[in-house]
Length: 58
Image (cartoon, rainbow, N blue to C red; front, top):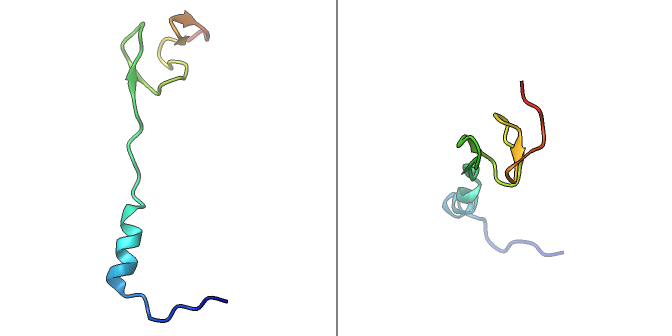
């Protein structure tokens, strides 16, 4: 089996783990009501998708 020749330093280990951060979700405006929503999903405020009413929202 492969075994590391040298100990990985704390700096090298932390550099590898530096890119584990979360990213903000991409949001787009609803074409009907203008509310921010996730793309390619039904709008939660008005219930439309692709300019058609899909879900009845109270």
